[in-house]
Length: 261
Image (cartoon, rainbow, N blue to C red; front, side, top):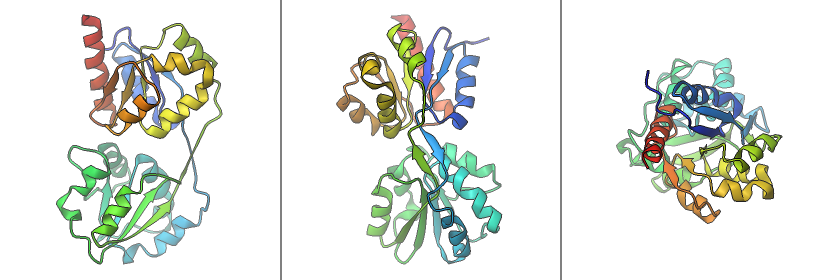
């Protein structure tokens, strides 16, 4: 049996409800997964936004779900109100989102083949001429404006529907602080700039130095300069995207190189 992560200890920072599969895969590969959620996902501030959207789905030309959380928080209340209109295409930004969509019996008409971010989605031919098209983007309570701004510049009428909130969880950092100080964490996994900033906040001044000398795995090039600006001096490991498979592949390649030194 192949155990590419034998002896590797990984700090998994995904939200609690999304960490299980990755943690299990790390452990199946011979590694150790220490779970420390740095984001908590809650419902929207205004629960009425989703029923209101359901009433006008037929008037739209495109719906974009920016994340798995947008799908898991936005779709159930939508589908509780009505069936998805057959004519209405769905766009997602990554493969994990496309898979989450399929769990609801729906298919993403638009998904980047490789680069899983707003830039990758905007590169698709179908989104080049957006004149007169009505677009709704389902997202959390904040985020990048680049996608909406770019679609508007191409002629679309774009609005946001905020279907969830990201909050800093209440968490005891003591076990992670102790593990970092003891050198018992080989690498930290982070999925977003916000996750990285929350991790820094949760660990506080006590954990800051140890965190910054620990290797960090990120899932987008956009995270790299942010991590460097925050003072991370250890190697940055870049996964091809945020899927479990890509994260595991990056971990295995990095760990093999480390063991060979």
